Length: 433
Ligand code: DLL
Image (cartoon, rainbow, N blue to C red; front, top):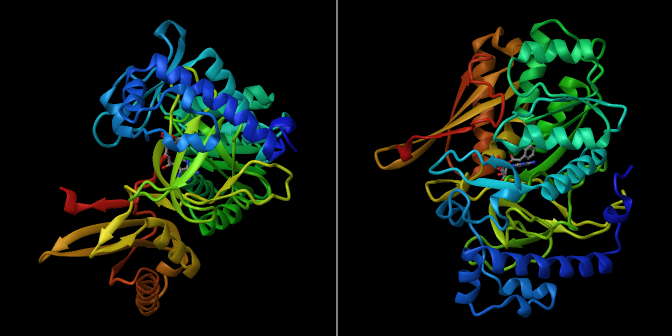
């Protein structure tokens, strides 16, 4: 099922032609309307007319989050405020947040892309979409909302939080699609269980479209099992447009990038050099149709790979792999690069644990330490201590093999690690304080 078959299945040659036309317009717009872009292009001696092929994109300088911060709040807008109809802001856990602006046309494109994403994940206009992404400055809530309305589904704008009410609404209103962060979907499943509600009998949910934070394939299986649904990965970021930049199809073999609206590149985060298909590196996006905040070669810090191999679903757009982590989430522990997602995969493979964990990094006698707090499943916790000791050792051994560094594992009682209603916090790095 497609939402816009023509553009989702455009032959790649035609797609490239369309991208080039749109790229030229974007560069033109950025150069003339945004002093930052004009200055950085002049610094490398490039004028909009120099962009004659898609390869010429590589002549253009990168844009970073710092560039957006330095031009806070409106300095990167390419349209006057009188044409901006919506403002969002990215989460910004450190320093100044970034502010993003949308013209009426941008909101229209975003709604189209989100309708496309929902259909790609299996939603139809007959569905009841319970939208538990936070509404507000975060792009998750309103982004999904507009897409769901564009699709013609019935959207329940419940936002995040108040988890018991989520479950009651899900049951009483017969929600068929859940949209929220993957970690929150597991919390909903847990509360459902506590309330004695059986996902098989009492709930009509058939699929979930989850994103906004990294998650592993093992976590997908856990969610699918606990909620009895099909779980689909959706990706996006505020600076580029919000959710809907890329989404899985029902093949679940990568996320199709909406390439008629964005050019995606993968670069080596250290050198900035482009990497070949299939290699993991930093994702870089260039918007092709945005008016309010066009972005040129925006460095996401997200790590993934890209393939243009045909997909059995018939869509011709390139697919990105799951985001395995962010360059700035990467922990360097005793010189070794560690991503929280690697530890998540190990934990879920071993079983007997709940998919809730916390990594605590510290420094003792000038040596980094990594402690992994893991919740044990309630059944096992009631059991003997001997079994717990065995499990702890097993987890420790598996993580040490996966990462190549020594770790401490602390098993904790069920429901003691804080649950999130939005993006989960998996790491406390005490070395930074
Ligand atoms: O998280 C937009 C969004 C909302 C995406 C709802 C999907 C669903 P930001 O708050 O600007 O926007 O955060 C963007 O979140 O750079 C990634 O690091 C991370 N992220 C988003 N989707 C995924 C995903 C929204 N599917 C940042 N897998 C991005 C892994 C993701 N990480």
